[in-house]
Amino acid sequence: MSLHRQMELLVEAPSTALSPEAGPLLKWIGNKHRFAREIVSYFPKGYKTYREPFLGSGAVLGTLAPERGVGSDSFEPLIEIWKALREDPQKLKRWYSERWHAMMDGKKVEKYERIKAHYNAKPNGPDLLFLSRACYGGVVRFRKADGYMSTPCGVHDPISPASFAKRVDEWHSRTAGTSFVLQDYRAAMEGASKGDLIYCDPPYTFTQSILYGAQAFDLKDLFRVIGECKKRGVNVALSIDGTKRSGSMVCNVPIPRSLFEREVMIHCGRSMLKRFQMNGKTLEKEVVHDRLLLTYELPT
Ligand SMILES: C[S@@+](CC[C@H](N)C(=O)[O-])C[C@H]1O[C@@H](n2cnc3c(N)ncnc32)[C@H](O)[C@@H]1O
Image (cartoon, rainbow, N blue to C red; front, side, top):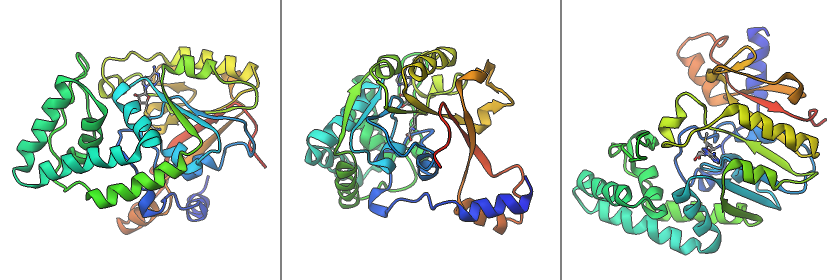
């Protein structure tokens, strides 16, 4: 594709920014907030239940705001946060506010480390919620051996309780039709039936086993489960991080050809374009950051 065409596509691409209130609830490594609108534009027009079995910070779910949805993840403290959002959003605001005041009333780093130690002694949603917003670079990292959360305190000040509360309200209404379940992706996908839509954003075999604790992840098995879904008439969209893919392989795992009807490139959107232009760089190698594999034909 010519550079000119790529730039055209970027300029045409819908803005991926949500309203400020709907900015991410959590900061999560590998989140799809920048790509969410574009990913959603490749979803089929109609579906029964939307399912996101690798929920993380739920960027795509929050953007789609489905009438009926199921969000799931195998990481318990994370699902504790999502359940609180649904069942008792005031509690979520309190969790954040209490920790924010404790930390911002002085001795920021010391207070952060205290919350982190509390989390590491007994992993839990309330601490994780705050740590994700306050940690360095918003990158929550877990030690592979034992799941210990190791990220130091961020240099930034986490958003105020009032701003956070606005996000909670917005996300609460965007997830009004969604239930949240602590579940392995296999069980989550087996629960899908004809006419459902599943969006998968799995961890990648190489790096992310470190980021998500000791959970082993087998991409080959995900392909098998996607195949079973396709046979049952369930549509599946799978994100593949462009940096982890070369040719027809993801890391060292071949992508089964017959499984997917389409592959589309997901771009970064305008802000990236602007940045590259300002740096005087060419775009050829930089624009493509993510890929989306679809078990169905593109919507027209
Ligand atoms: C790349 S992240 C998803 C990011 C998400 N799209 C977002 O916007 O934040 C992958 C997620 O898969 C979860 N996960 C890892 N292994 C899993 C498994 N076996 N079953 C279900 N979820 C799993 C991790 O806890 C993590 O939240």
